Every structure is written in structure tokens, then in C-alpha cells.
Length: 288
Image (cartoon, rainbow, N blue to C red):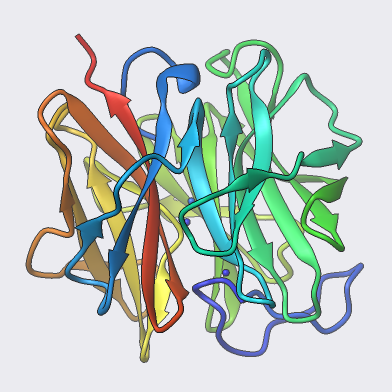
């Protein structure tokens, strides 16, 4: 599934960037053009209130980052024009967003989708994304690629980070001594790990059947993961889970958010912001 919400401890070095530390589907009907990004607010990360209005139209699979000057950036799939592709929008108040026009130099395929962005403490941005041709659901191996940027808007592709059959929606985070990638593939969330963030190796499938995940945030000496119920195609719930190792998760009591009848919430990305928390997530119509 950021400083980003997860920024924490000293990290190993990226090969090209000495010294930095790192500070995201589910169902729905109509494809990304029919999706919107909403937000919610919380003082403690547990009790959430839905914010009024829509943050981004024709937008899907959001990933939030808090910039060094306190702004919120949401990286997302922009389907306002064809073909859909990754974009980024920025906000000073967490509510009103302006698109910045994401660019990735050297993308080897037609589309760059499902962006997972991290802001490093040296000021560099790293973006992991799903690279594909016209059909994101095409059979065969899918590539999650890595790109870097000084401004978080203009990126340069740096090659394949992880590949496997049917991968989509990568979320990357650092915990304790390694990088973790949670990425949906073959009907379940796959965990891949890396020592340097450049190339990832399959570790195991995530043992949270039926839950769609994003990158977690740090809460004290543990991680909190926000996940959505993939089994309920309308009025589904967002729950939270706790972990000390980034692999095994225990559900926390209570419900964080519940979608309205006829709607589904997915991809709940949480960041710390202005003494509290903001959640950015996708709303889609329930499949008919």
C-alpha cells in the first residue's frame, strides 16, 4: 500500500540514490472511467468520517503521499482520457486537488497503471507501477516496474522490479530490514521482498483471503494495514489489521468505513496529515 505515512527507520541504499529512506483492486462496474476517488478523515486512525464531495473524477486506485512541505499528492489511474494512465494531483487542504500531469520517460508499454509512490528522505520519489499494453487483463507474465523522480511528477523508468503471471495493483513499503511489495495476482495478494528496492523476489501469498490491501502505516512499534472486503460487492466494509513483521496480520476490532448500498469501496490508502489521518479510496458502482 509515505514523508509518506510509513516513514520510519534507516534504509538500505538504492543503487542510484545514496542514503535515502522511504518515508496501494477490487471489483466495481464500468471500469476506471466510472470510478471516483473519495476521502475520509480521522483523529486516531480508527474512527473515520467520510469527507463531503469527490476528490477526483474518472479516477481509480489512489496512492497518497505527503510532501515535505505538507501538501497531499494522490497518484492514481486517470481515465478522463483514453487510454487511461497514471497521473498525480496535489492539494494544500487535502480536499481540493489539481492535476500535475505525471510523466514517465522510457515506459516500454502502452500504459502505466496502478501507481505506488514513495517519497524518500533525500527528496527523491520512487514510483512502482504496472506496465501493460491495451488489455490490462491479458494472460501471461505482468511487469511491475520502477521509476525515479526529483520532483514527483517527471519520472524516468529504471526497469522491472517484479514480474509474475496476472499481477496488478502493487503497493510497496519498507519495514525493519527490507522492502515489501503487496501485489494482487492469481486471485490473491502476493508478497515479494527486496533488500534494495530494485528487484523483488516472491516470498509467499498473503494470508488474508478475501481482503484487498494497500501499503500499511506505522503505529508505534507495529504496522496497521487498511483492507477492503472483496467478497461483498456492495455496502462492503473497510477494516484494519495489525502486524509486527509485515507478513502476519491480526484483525483489529471494529469497522473503519462502510460503503453505501449499490456502491463498493476499494484501495483505502491512509497517510498521517496535520495531526490526524486522511484516507483516500476508490468508489465504484456494484457489479450488476
